[in-house]
Image 1: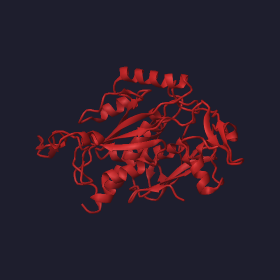
Image 2 (image 1 turned 90 degrees about the horizontal axis):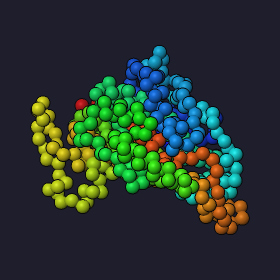
Image 3 (image 1 turned 135 degrees about the vertical axis):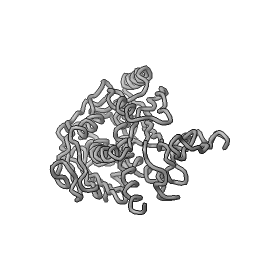
Amino acid sequence: MASVFGERLRVSVFGESHGPGIGTVIEGLPAGEQVDSDTLQRFMERRQGGRNALSTARKEPDIPKVISGMFDGKTTGFPVCLMIENTNTRSGDYSNLLDKPRPSHADYTAFAKWHGHADMRGGGHFSGRLTAPLCAAGGIAKQILERRGIFVGAHLSSIGSVQDEPFPMLPDAVLFDTIAAKPLPVISDARGAEMQQEAAAAREALDSVGGSIECMIVGLPAGLGDPMFDGIESRLAKVLFGIPAVKGVEFGDGFALSQMRGSAANDPFCYDENGNVRTETNRNGGILGGITTGMPVRFRVGIKPTPSIAQKQKTVSFRTHDNTEIEIAGRHDPCIAQRAVPVIEAAAALVALDVLLCDAEVR
C-alpha cells in the first residue's frame, strides 16, 4: 500500500500517529528552487494544536528534517525527503481501544483489511497527524507558486450553523496573509467569536461539531488541465478526499447551482482592461470542462465532526463478538475544521504546482 498522488509532482506520505516519526517524499520539484525554512515553519505552525482554547492539547514542534533533495536551502532536482518526529504521544490512551472500534473512525475498516496487524494507536496512518508532512510538502509548493504570481489561501467558512463571510471574487495575497496570521482563520472576527462559542458548547456537552473551509487559488493562467477524468476538479478532489475528516467537496457555487436557472448560473465573458478574457461572475469556480478559465479556482470542503467524543458510544468487541460500549479518553479537538485550513491550502498548492509542471511541457 502506498499513499501517493500526483503526475509530474509525485507526493507520498508515510508513518503512523504514534510511531517514531512521519514524513513525505516529493519527487519532481524543479532544481534550484529556494525554500525559506522560517516561512515553511510558520506555515507548519498553523495546523498545530494549542493555538487557541478549541484545539487539542497535543502540540508538537513539527520541525521537518531534510533527509535528501535539498542543498544550501535549494532543491537539487532529486527527491526531497522530509521527516518529522513524533514527540508527544500517549499511547496508553488507546490501550482499551484495540478490541473496540471507535465509531466513525477507520478502526473497523483497518481491522477488516489488515486483520489487526495495522498500528492503529492514535489512528495510525489514518490520523490527522499525517497532515503535518502534507503541510510540509504543500508549504514548499506554496513558496514556488508565489514566485510565479500564484497564491493559495483559505478560511474557516463555517462551524456548525455559524457562517463566515465568503471570499470576494478577486481576493489578493494580503487578505490571505491577514487571515493566516489570526488564531482563528476567519474573515469576520465577529463571526469567528460565534464559531468559537459553537465549538465550546459542543465541548461542554462532551461532543464535537463539524465545519467547512473555503479555498481559492489565484493567478493560475487559463488553459491548464484536461477534460473529463483528469480535470482540475478531479485532481483536487482526489487529494482533498485523502485528508482525514473531509466528507464533501464542491467547486464554485457547487450544489447551489442545481437550484438555479442557467441565466443565473452562467458566468458571462468579458475583456478586462488588459485585454484578457475574464468572467463577470465566478459561480463555476474558475474551471470549465476541467480546464482553468484564468479566474480564481474556488472550492469548499465539508469537514465532519471529530469522531472522538467523551460520551459513551455503542460499538462491538472483536474478541468476544458482543455488542458493547466505549468511552474515549485522550486529547481531541471539539472541531477539526479550524486546524484543517492550512492542510487544504497545502493540498491545493501541490495540485496547482503539479498541473503547472504538467502543462509546461506542452506549452
